Image (cartoon, rainbow, N blue to C red; front, top):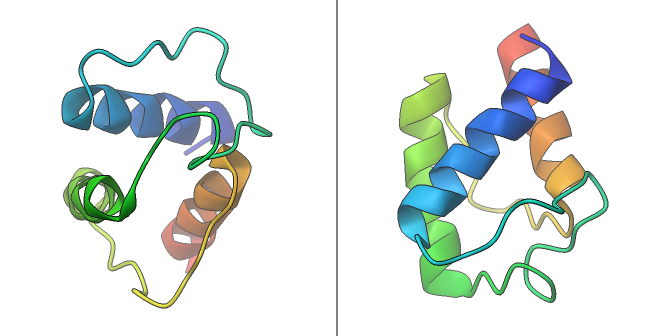
Length: 80
């Protein structure tokens, strides 16, 4: 799976959890909390949806800051 496919999957999940969010300008450097407004509850929902979408287990101890952090983590899990 390519990084672009992972990014698109992440965008789909965020849009599902926060339907009113505008994701048009989202890049790898987009900050999850500051720019997307993902609070702790929303992050839990995003993590659960990402686990289901990509069929992976996400370590609850990780603290991603950017979209790229999430994409790299998922890519690493898929490659393992």
